[in-house]
Image (cartoon, rainbow, N blue to C red):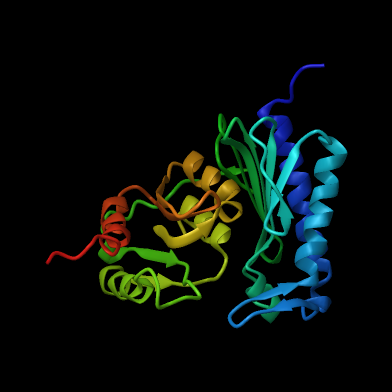
Length: 263
């Protein structure tokens, strides 16, 4: 039996993302079932439940593969690893805001080769393989042509620890530099919006691999520019995605805040 192709992997990513997303969407009436409560975050019963739905699809098709998800699992460089965010935008989901998604990607030899991001409330499916185009509901997508940050709309995340990492300074500088800044609360959706030209950039000073594994590949294959600015640890990093034309200006905002001040 021949090895699976990237197309085979993508078909599985789509099936898993759809199964997980549809499960979460169908169970929105249970969105207030809290597993753990934190000061500025929440972990839902449906986070873990949705990951289990995704994992079943993956294990049924590739039982020998590893799975790394926000709700558990670990990567294994010796075999393909599926990277899962069952509900990216959990707080949005919890409050009934229709900006959240289920994200599934596969990593082979430390490289993401296929991924799918499914946004059930909008009925949008973003897909890509490392050797194929980025698609939205089967149609090719590409980033915007906005060439000036002053005319750009930039999405960003906001760390819960606003006293660390220059978060407020970065947000201030972004607000003064871009036409508009948006904090939508679902990184994978934001990055896909850069991929299809709805946003011109996305910047985050502490994002996790499961947030960007699928969406980052989709953005890259769409023609956007994707860059890990700095690793915080094996799973978390400072991240930048843009249409390419405003990339340097955005990078300056996220890198200048980590430079040591002169005496």
